[in-house]
Image (cartoon, rainbow, N blue to C red; front, side):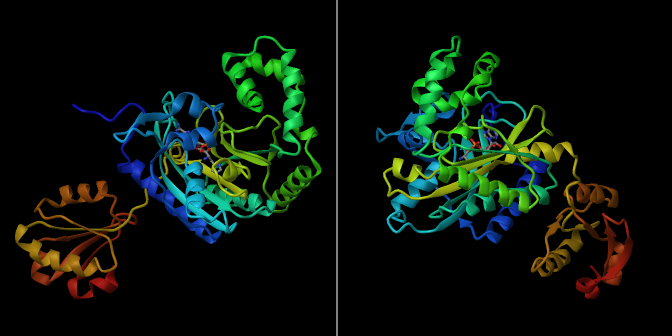
Length: 408
Ligand code: HAM
């Protein structure tokens, strides 16, 4: 037996049903917000992520699927989607013109994490990236887009937001935090590493001792420059005016190094300990870090597996769809093929090629999740009709083949 690797899963069956449902809703909402589709490669040069996601992140520090390809390039399976999309924006010279671009994407991301419910090594994200807009209304719109997606999926969430400052105010905050930490003892190994690489990442350390040490640490919210403060206040006003509840969290720094100003996370209690179902923020400096002309960027990604885990828990009934067409005698199959070809012009049809007893066909229609069951037995063949059963409402009747279009 050759099995899938640990932390990697086939998207099939019920899982595939939820997967396509989530993507369909995300795409509809993203298009309504003016976003269009982009797809970037799964494999990129490792340095793309080292420079963007950052050396202080767990992703770059511990979780990348990295190897040397046959051409001697150090490459990596993408651990997230933003860096590739920013690379594409720069590679196609859109940064030079400061083009306004709004893209959405979905697909596999790879992180070598310890697998558990809602945490995989190959997982799927739906994400959006918006370039060329400095306005904080864009940040608010992205949050409202996520609210719309979760509302359509009937998923409850809590929202936390923070401002991570900008090159005007962040350096002096980092200095104050550093001075504070220099007086503390017993930071965990990860935090000692983060202290040198990106000190604010220490704020969201999960280690209890580190959190105790941080209790009296200086707060970035008290050190924001007037421009960051103005934007952050406006963001909160927009959310309130649109009826979105949120909490401020000074310790929300996100696990990736590229953020500035707005940072946000959507949390769900429905899959065990508070799990992030989506996260994002503004990354105005990233385009420049990756060699482009300085510009504006903001985006988010949501974790599809985490949403599936919530929907599965709710035991949401898979919606029935399509027609199951079958016969009790193999000689009727050529006629059924003609009927199916006609119906398939605008309907989904599962056609069974084998003769079976009615009960067996009904069981197969049920497991195919069909909505309508049509079967030809001896009587039906004689009358040029079909036995009809609606598997949702349980209604049964005979339908003449000549009336099929209108009778379904
Ligand atoms: P992230 O917070 O690393 O952000 O990931 C976004 C979401 O992906 C998380 O909230 C979570 O739902 C899901 N996720 C992360 N790791 C796993 C995993 N191992 N298994 C299952 N789901 C997971 C980013 O990736 C940024 N690129 C988001 C962004 C876009 N920021 C700006 N633009």
